[in-house]
Structure formats: C-alpha cells, structure tokens
Amino acid sequence: MAPRVVIVGGGFGGLTAARALRNAPVAMTLVDRRNHHLFQPLLYQVATAALSPADIASPIRWILRHQRNAEVLLGDAVGVDTGLRIVQLADGEIPYDFLIVAAGATHAYFGHDEWRKLAPGLKTLEDALEIRRRVLLAFERAERQPDPVRRKALLTFVLVGGGPTGVELAGALAEISRQSLARDFRHFDPGSAKVILIEAGPALLAAFPESLRAAARHDLERLGVEVRTGAAVTRVEPGRVTVGNDTIAAETILWAAGVAASPLG
Image 1 (spheres, rainbow, N blue to C red):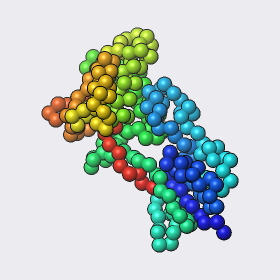
Image 2: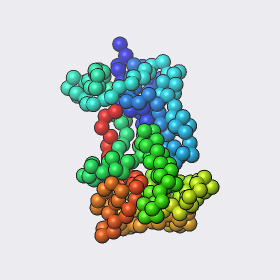
Image 3: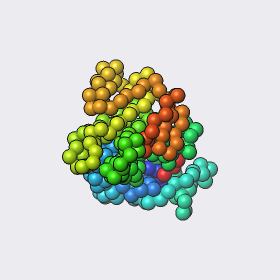
Image 4: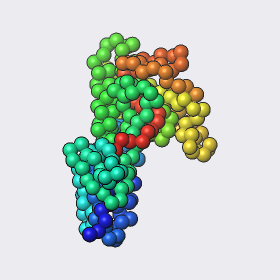
C-alpha cells in the first residue's frame, strides 16, 4: 500500500507540496476548511470593490483534478496526534504516514484580541467582503448624515500597519474616494474622505529596500493619504482609535499590523 501523505492547507504552500508529489508513489489527501484556493496578493482589490471574489478564488478540486494520486477533503483541522499519526478534524480524523502542515497565517493583535471585531484584518474572502461592506456603507451613511462632525468620522478610514497589505489598502481607498466614487454622491464630496495609515515602526514596508519605502510613501501622500510612522496604536474603541495621546474619530478601522501562525485549518 502506498504511504499516505496528508497536507493541511490549500494555499500556496499546500498546493506547491501537492504538485511536487504528483508523480510520487503516495496516496495524498489535502484538507482545508474552505474549498477554494485564494490568490491573496489581490485580496485588497476585492476589499475595495475593484474585483469580485470569483476573480481571485479557484476550487481546489479543479486545480488538482488531473492529479490521480490526490484527493481533496473539506474539513477543519483542529489538532494533530503525532503518536497515533492522526490529523484531528472538527468532525472526524484522518490517518497519515507523512504530514505537511501549510495552514498559513492569521492576524496578530498583540494581546488585544478584543480589537478584532472593531478592526478587521484581511486574510480571507470573508474578511474582504466585510471590509467592502464597511467601506461602502460608510459612504452611504455619510450621504444621509447632516452633522458635519459625524460625517467627518464616517469619512475617516484608519489603517493600522504599514506593511504591504496596509499600503495597498490605503492607496486603494484613496483612489476609490477620489476617482471611482467621485461623482456618485450629491450631498458631500467623496474626495473629502480622509485615509490615515499608521505604522509603529520608523518606515513603511520595513522589509523592502529604502528606495521602495520612500517611493511608496511619496505615492501614498500624492494620493492624499496621511502617513504616520513611529506611531503605535494604544486603544481601539467603537468609532475611534488612540495613537499615543491623539484620539482619531473614525467609523472604519482596518487592521494590517501583524501576522501569527494560523491555527490548523
């Protein structure tokens, strides 16, 4: 009997491993809590309504349909018993001879998980659609809001984290407010929306060369994004975020400040 290989996760890592074993004499099972592979680099475009979910998601079964030594199972992996060589699912278990864990990453709130509902991150299609809903609803509510102070808060978008996701989201939000939605409302100017990008470190895109960091900041500021570096968020509450001694009234707060290893999935 061919040895059984179980791969947990259908992202880039899991699919790369599966394809690498396509000619190996093994029986392979790929398990994921979702039935689609997600092209995460374009997830921010779904969040800002530039793309639809179907544009960046493909069924895992379809991707591996020609690989005869592979099967795909929909399941939520919750643990591994290395002694018994079993992957534990929420509703069962899968035995293995060899195990590859490629469950990806999730959001890191640095000990403040209570901020999760107030400041959603961007890792899944569900996250992207929730962010899209919040952003578009903010503009709709601003159209009906006569109080200029409340309207300003509705049109203030705060992004926490100056890595690739935060930079992409900030730029996309600035573009849709000043271009895509520029003529869609009658009672306010969408271009008056304020996008604030907050980064605790000294620069955006810390892992990139200095020239790219500087270019990213320049381009964001040219789009009207307010970039704050060396500024750490200390509190997130409904409708406001605190940065040091400064409190910003903002109905939409988005989180892109860190990643952590994902629980099995």
